[in-house]
Length: 214
Image (cartoon, helix red, strand yellow):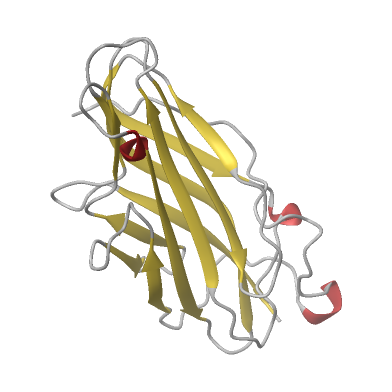
């Protein structure tokens, strides 16, 4: 089994604290268990050089604790004979989570996975941010991916429940997810690449929910 390498420890500036969220008077304390009703998530739109139409999808976990974004053609690369535009790939997903009546949610942790072949001297990174429709964008968080590498990479963002921004109770607001991969050849003389994809669809990004009652 391939070892998971890059382990991100950065705290996620997820939906900055200055954004408007459901007030404490309109929502209760976070729940230990998610709602039992089946959660539905719709991929409303996708755009970007890393997720051409039909190359990304989303799915809810059976226990309603997370959803996963799966990419099948998300690759940044750099090196001899490779156009410089290939060194940065991005994807913007717009998703709608259908929340059971009387509940709201926040994203408290995100796990990223992919594969990298990075030559010694090359540089690479993964960036992301997320925000609810109608709210200001949060700051991007960046995870460097260290070269040399010929293996899976893994990064994780986590924020305490007390610091997250909750989906406004009783409103339909889409969640915007922006991700980016960057690769530069640096001092290397051979090609390098970084992916957030897999031929078997097993490489993905997982967004973990916290739930509370409105």
